[in-house]
Structures are given as structure tokens and as C-alpha cells.
Image 1 (spheres, rainbow, N blue to C red):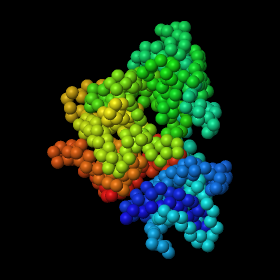
Image 2: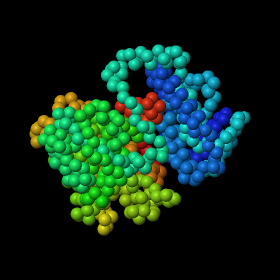
Image 3: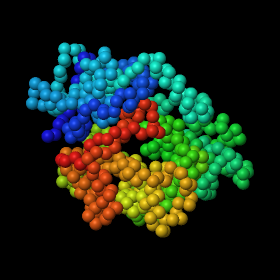
Image 4: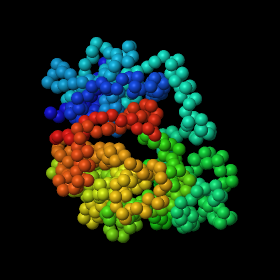
Length: 572
């Protein structure tokens, strides 16, 4: 039975309107209860105290939202965010969800504290009405309409375990004393905070070009020769000593972080309105007036966007060219790469295949962009571009898409142990401009590539391919199951799952199509390696990342995960 949820009721004092059906449909197949992990084992009190205070600060700044004064687009944005907050709260074990009956034919999804951690809030709850029309239950308390997902976070955070403030301070002092990160931390001045009004600046950032002694830098690949044509187009002068100095681009807003560490660096020039940021915000491509530059610059941006700081680690710079050489030789011909041809501290030069695509009548589109919707239009760009008006057309297109995607992403994983982080931001679809057929894909961001070296070295031809990757590098792993879990998350949950949801196929046989195309690509009846992966991905439960828990803990380097029912097994 499908369950449709379009509103929330907060017992005692809150009432939230508007929730898409995705979360409730998912929850129907998951008998969700309290987290089996004890409170003391799963959440530390210092983090909890910090989280509650952060949430209260947020609510005090935002204040109440008056429903009648919110624009439809703002309401829709809050609507989408709220859905994700509640789904994450349940999946992460922060809230306990149960199905309850009421005085109507429909059911209610009720969210409560998993353990009643704070006595004054034990009776607080969040209820989701399972029908399209509005449903309100006052429970004897005051009801007020709220759309701000921060309000939900305020309730959820109060459900988390809490100890006395003195205990929290004691834990904090102890951790700071023994933490290796704290003992090696170099205090630096803060950068200028980024406010909402600064977003246009991030989209078209100012670049600075520094002249730095080569002795202060570690260079990988032909960095200087690749950058020279771009410098000429931008009018950046050459260094006085081209033998001993090198030019390094950076975001101008990063200069306060850079100049204290490189006292011998000097600015050769700055440019404005000559580049545009890509999806990650830290990678920029040049505007057409600069010339048809095939280069993209991936630069450090000390800003946390989604779950990560958008900086470039030394490992990413050091391994970029070596990983690119491996991928270029082993990936299928129709799976192109944005080659990371050269790198230096905090800058990676990418070669874009856009000109290559244009020469054969193709274009490259980020998959994440295809899932978006134009302003005031309920159709995705997929539906608009490919003319998907009926359910049958969407199902047919989706099957063809998966056939091409799986045939290119999965063979490197099965045969060579190469894990591609194939979420929708890292993957671009290649489309024939004339007939709009999908001809292949292109991938980018080599920092998240992983190689299971026992599988990789089974092939004699691969024996020397790892010579440029030092032992112990994070690119190499011997944990095959961890790698398979990661691909399940990035490819099947984040990429394919989001795609079928945006096409409205989640309750229209979408997951059945995914299973059928996986079986076709992996051939479990005739391929032993394919069988092992197929059986692993079709287990009853899979690890799921707890992103809300990570965000509440202010953690981005360490994953928090829980075993949840496998979304891949969902029946329509």
C-alpha cells in the first residue's frame, strides 16, 4: 500500500505542513524502531550539548516563519529540505518511527525520541498525516504552522542524550589534550565569512596568480607548460626567473591563508569575471572570451559545502596524474575521463573532453543538472530534453540509461577492482546532439578513486601500473566489501535512486528495472566475480551513511553508518 504524507503535526507546540511521499514510501518497507546501540555507545554528550546550543542559536536568528508570507518557491524549498531532515533522522536512528491509527481510514507516521532522553520533552512528537488533504490533531496543545526545517532539528536535538554541562566540559578538555590534530594545529586568522549575498561572487570568483619559488612547491606533471597558454590569454606576466619560479593560481579570497605560509610569494595579477564555478564551487572553467581553453582549474576553497571542506589535500595533488594514467588505459572506450594532467599544492589542472565531444556532435551534461527543474516548471530537464511525457516513455528511457551506465561503470570494478565514485555530480552523460541518444559517460574527480589491489594485480598487465602510487596511499585498499558498499551508496542509492525518484518511477517498477539491469550487466549465472558482487548488493540489509548524524556532530572526515533494509530490494 502506498502511503502519501503531506503534513506534519508537532505535539504540544509545532505544526509543519508539507512532505513529499518519498520518505513515507520508504519507511513503509522499513520496520523502524529505536537504535539498538545504547545511548552511551552511540552519541557523546559533549557533541550533543554543542549541537543543541547550535540549534537554539539558529532558531533564535531565524525566528518564526509566517506561512502566509512565504512565497510558493520558498515553501517548496523548505518542503524538500524538511523531507530530507526527517528521513535522515529516522534512518540515522536519531528518532523512532511507528505507524499509528487515528479516527480516519488513514494511518499516521509518528516520530518520537528513541529513549526519552530529556524528561521535559518525552511527550514531544512529530506526526505525518498519510493523506493528501490536511490533517490536524491538536492533542490539547497550541498548534502553529512551521515550515522551517530548523524547527524540526530543534526537536530532534532535544531527543539526543544529555549529560551535565560540567561533564561535557571535562570531555572536551580531555579530548583537546590528547588529540593529535589539536597538538599539531597551526592557528590562523579566520577568512571573511561567506553570507548568502556572497553567492554570486562564488559563482564568478576572482582569481589571483602567485609567483612562488619552485623550491617551496611540489609539482606533478607538466604544470607550467599546460598553464602558459591560459596565462597569455588572461594577460598574466611571466615570472622574472622562469627557471626557479612557477606561477600558481588561487582564489583571491584564499590569499589570507596562503601569504603567511609562503612569504616569498608575490602576486603577478588578478582577474575578475573571467571564469565560472562548476557544481563543486572549487573547480572553475574559463568564460568564452578567454578562448577555447580545454583546461579546468580545481582550486582550494576553504568553505564547507554539503558535508566537506572544498579544499585539495596533498594526497589528491600527489596522486592525480598517476591515477589518471591507470584509468586512461583500463576504462571502456565510451567511458571518458576528465584527465587530471598536472597538479601542484592546492591546484589540479584538468583536461576537459568538451571539445572532443563537440567534434563528434556530442555534448556533456552533469547528471545532477539533468535532475533539476526549471523555475516554475514541475518537469525535470530529463523529461524536457528527452521528451518523456508518458510513464512508458520514462520507463523505456530509464532502462536504456541503466544499460549504458552499468555496462561502463561495473566492468572496471569487477575485472580490475577499480571503484569509481559514480554519484551524479562526478558523472557526466554524453548525448548526441542530433538524435538525443546517450552515447556514453565521462567521469571526474580522481581523489575518490579506489583500487582493490589484490583484484588489480590478478592481471599480469597491471603489475607495473601501480609503480607511481606509493604503498599505503589511500587510493589502494584491500577491503573489497567496503569498496562494494561505497559503490552501492554512490551509484545505486545516490545516482540511480535519485534519478528514478525524480522521474516518478519509485512506485512504478523503477527498482525492479534496476535489479534486472544489474543482473544483465553482472551476469551472475555465468560470471563468478559478477555473482559475488550481485549477491552482495542484493543482501537484505546494507550499510547506510548517517549524514544528519555527521552534520550534527560537525564531522566530515569520519563516516557514521547503520545497517538498513536494502532499498534495492524494494518491490513496486
